[in-house]
Image 1: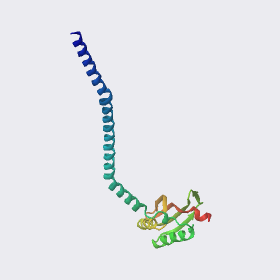
Image 2 (image 1 turned 135 degrees about the vertical axis):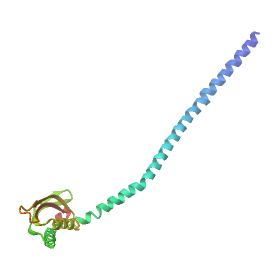
Image 3 (image 1 turned 180 degrees about the vertical axis):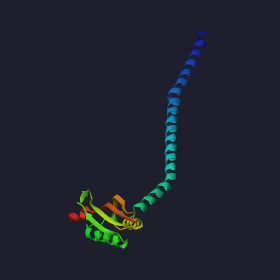
Image 4 (image 1 turned 30 degrees about the horizontal axis):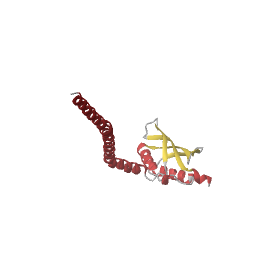
Length: 181
């Protein structure tokens, strides 16, 4: 009987050792590997999901880029490489004459250098009907040269004759490297 109990104990110890060995040497490493694979799979699914979302946003971004390029136009082409101030001021005077604006004063200010650009403020003053002034501004903004209108002051005549006095400050630009060369 003692032999039989020892045999059962040995069998139970051997079975426990086999189960313990299986758990420690096979089951736990495979479980860790399974967790790593599940983590990698979820990361891949997340990356695919992000890619899909970004792919869906691509047409929207392309449309925004197209609109931005359209609004900017040929920006650099509108900044001449040479100062050409005399031609610009002559063109402004011509526009004022074309729109029947009187008492014209066009005075360039001191140029300011800002990185790759030279900025020249120009003070303008004239007198005419409001509709003529608006047409003048439309044509001014449609010029091939980049112009920033900084300030506009419109003053009605005291006798209400329909004439308006306009005082405007604009800034024109040209490329700085042209002046250095």
